[in-house]
Length: 113
Image 1: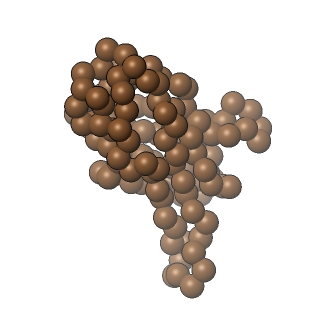
Image 2: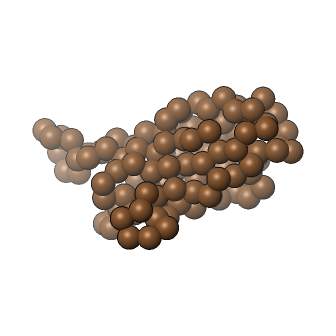
């Protein structure tokens, strides 16, 4: 399953550098036989980190996404979920640009079946 992390452009008419950070789907329903990969969308987004709260289905508490090369899409490795116990896993996402960090600290979750 691909989970998209989207950093929207600066919103016209809003003060400062107001932006939206979205995780799509916000609630990912995933089978334990699947794999998962996070992919970043946003023209000035450079990297991201996914940090699981309490428990992780992927064998590590942090997943990093960086481009493989200049101009490449920012994404994590493909991670197999085999062996992870079925339950709800909550995580936070932080996205870095060259000047700022944006955080979605408690909304996304993965429901592993």
